[in-house]
Image (cartoon, rainbow, N blue to C red; front, side, top):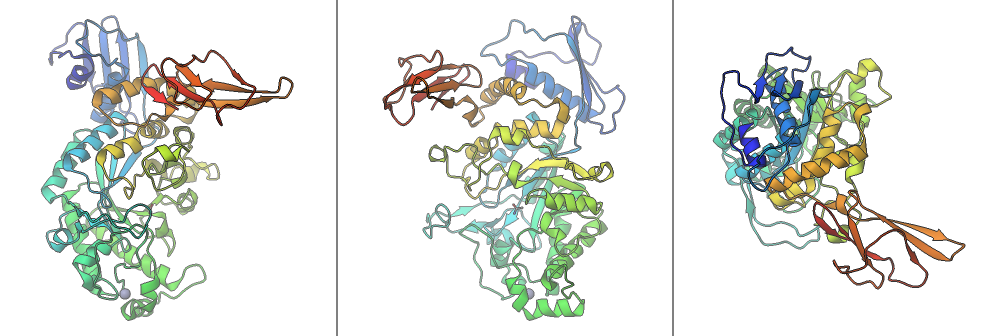
Length: 544
Ligand code: ACM
Ligand code: ZN
């Protein structure tokens, strides 16, 4: 709290364990709520009291007070906090954010910065996607080549698999010691790190290091392009099952989280269909096609079931992407529903826990505006802030009993088109603020207009923290109305915070000296294709 206040107000408060007048009192003496993450804040003329249902609850109370403070440029002489009482608790116990560090590696400091950003948004799970076709990023002592070979990519395709390559090596991995440092850094902020070892697909970097783990024996290279590779772990070889056990055993020693993610998404079965070892496994275990699933889908299930048994024996629970439904779910699996919500709905009906991460609402690698020409290249899609905010994760088609299996919500950030950490922030912010409200707020309390007002204040904190956030909310929103009587087009322009708008009608860039927008502009003859507008926002300038 002292650090947060110092950053916002440039004041360093003294800390004492004795009762003091006019102080901010932090306490966990309050009653425990069911999730243990609730808190109350009481502000009166005598001081501020934050009471948490647990240490985590207290932490969220501190975050709320922190966000309620203004961000000042110099030391505060005094700040006013409105008197009142807040009682708050999260809607979902699992509030996640995912980061892919395989496609593009980010430094340890950047991972910590990411975790700080999660803390600001009351997010309590960091899903760390550590392995994929394009790079293996975590040290495994039994298989050193995973990082000496698998963490190195000689070059990367330019753009959307153009066939042209950049000629620049890309590499990086976290030692086990560094990963433990991240676990501890996150724990101090009440965030659990959930590692993902994506299997049996998305394994080409591992195959480059250990080609004997593939169906063909290779050789393989750490993949230099994007997409879904046909080169996957051979499901017929016992050394592959041992590899999975060894890797997961080391992973559980680094990461104390209850859940370990084993991927299971996008595993092409083309090589399994031709591989004698895979076909023998199918025959030996009677994994024949059964009308519902193909033999190869059941083989995938066999591998995932094996991983789950290993994890359960180590005292852990397994999460898999929704493809793990395809050959039949492993008995205790939690499902992360990414291809829309259908997989999550199906898993909840089968009484498996579900985390909703539908790409249609929560894939933050998608564009956040239609004006893609002025954006850094992204994977595609269109996911503006308002759409994220509007997401309701509890499917209406589930019964109240089945709804209990929806334990949480998460947004994912795949990094094929995100080469720098600054761009990670740009893609996350401010959409993460909308995510945070889906995860935390009760649906009847949600109100997009109110959210935008609060967001303007939150963005002051983004500025103070030096975050690189997208500014689309400051754009001018045009509405064109054709007036058949006067034979004009009326252009109405609004901004989110009623910022000053200046415009031109000749296609040139508006400046501070251009005419001020005072109401609908009537266009009666050829102007440029649309009037150019510049919104001069109260918070940050943004030109349209
Ligand atoms: C995924 O987006 N392949 C889980
Ligand atoms: Zn095979």
